[in-house]
Length: 142
Image (cartoon, rainbow, N blue to C red; front, side, top):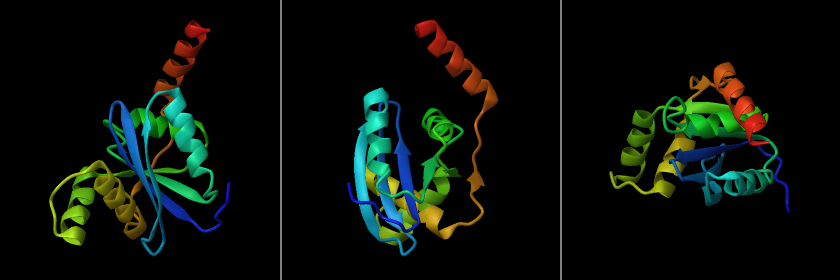
C-alpha cells in the first residue's frame, strides 16, 4: 500500500450501520473516499484504508450524537479526532456546491472541508465512562 506523508483530514458522515469518509489535503483536494459498515470488519477495513495517510485527523460530524460511538472507537485506537457541528457542514455543502441536496459522500466531503478551514473545532478525548462500559462488555463477551 502506498503511503502519503502530507497531513490529511478524513471527513466522516456517520450513521448507525455505516460511515462514509472522504479524505482531503490542506488544499481541499479529494485524495480518497469510501463507505464502510460500522461492524468490526467494516471498522477494521476503514482504519486499514486510512493508514495510507499516516498524518491524519478524523473530522466526525455529530461526535456527541450519532457519531459518538465511532469517534470514541477512533480515539481508543489512538487516532486524532475533532467534532464538526452539523450546521457548519450543511453551510459548506450549500455554499460550495450551490446545492442543498444531501448525499453521504457530499456530507463527508463538507465535513472534511469544515475541518480544513476551521481551527477552533473541538478536539475530542476518550470518554472514560463509555470506555469503562466497552471494557465491561468485552470482558462479558469473552
